[in-house]
Amino acid sequence: MNTSSVAPLPIVILISGRGSNLQAIIDRTAAGELPVEIRAVISNRPSAAGLQLAGKAGLETRVIDHTGYADRETFDEALQACIDSYQPALVVLAGFMRILTPGFVEHYRGRMLNIHPSLLPDFPGLNTHQRALDAGHREVGASVHFVTEDTDGGPVLMQARVAVREDDTADSLAARVLEQEHRLYPQAIHWFADGRIFLDENGQIQLDGTLLEQPKTLSAEISAPC
Image 1: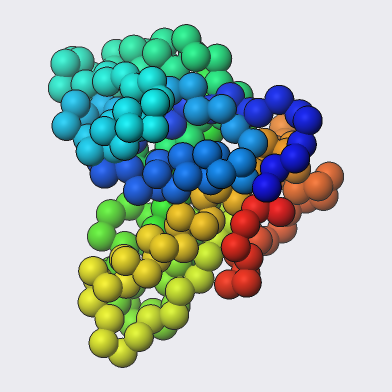
Image 2: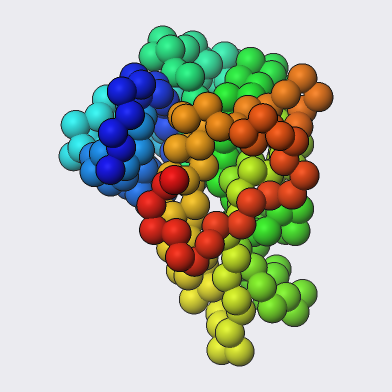
């Protein structure tokens, strides 16, 4: 349980789909285990199921439909204006399926996180689980990273690892990785909210005042942020 007297960190969450990581963040926040204030949930897709999850939790939702804009730049400008109206200290990408323009990324440098279903730098992009199986990998996982201009290429803060079973399919593997994502992302956000991590002027992660040379691995024993 969070007993800190520090004001909760204002965040905005961006989604494109079902919102399972959004729900994990909502649940941890509601339980008092994550010191954040979710000021808005924004989607680029009006039909995103995660909007309903946010609505049920009493959160403000907004839709900036990318199909209504002529190009990425004008969409990102509208999205940025919407985000900034809520004055977040952190932007959380939770299944937001858009490639962001360099200007947008630079605007949120050091205060935008993403979660990706692979052990980065392995398998950036889509279809990560099938690609891992095709490559014969015996271990997969998920990574939380700061967002940079390189798609899924920003500095990685934390990872969770999942062993590949002999009978695994892409779907079965994805399900087990997703379970770890729901533990991993709130942990990383908690560290940011506590001021334990930040991106320095060299684009490197500092954790507790020390350069993070390798991503932290979420232990199987960890059940709550620390």
